[in-house]
Length: 162
DNA sequence: GCCAACGTTGGC
DNA sequence: GCCAACGTTGGC
Image 1 (spheres, rainbow, N blue to C red):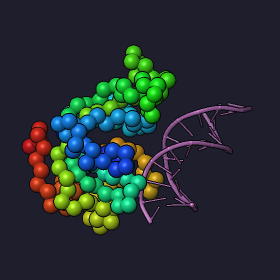
Image 2: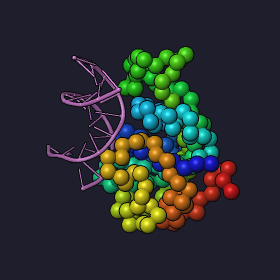
Image 3: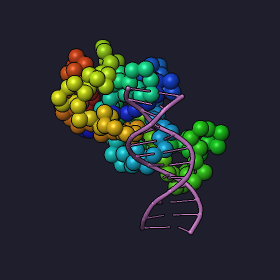
């Protein structure tokens, strides 16, 4: 079981949107970056933990927890010419882009702001804090995951863990 | 709105 | 295969 941080603009798809999705489950689609694609396709598996991060907003922060419920599979939004994520180079036979499904798990009692992360010795090194860090899906270490939960005051045991 | 950082594209 | 130009991201 591994851990990830997923970035989203709340004006586009927020933690609320995930919670309100049917069964609290939504596909994580529309990622059009090769490095993130590789993670979605090859590394991210059902059961993995997700730190849900809001970016490009008044207070960028980790706001919740989610869990991967389906590992990488072809992103069919690339096949929709009307959609915002259409890519003519992708085809059902030879998909370029991949997505996963994630399920809402928890809202943090208090969002973990960038300042809060920076001020924590175990979290200050997180990729999301690094300058120019644009990867929308980022690996998180087990230590960072635990420290984030501790800092949030959350005791969450995900299915498949422990 | 600014601007640094990054990924992608395309000319050569 | 290099690299400049461009578009996008995202914190501030």
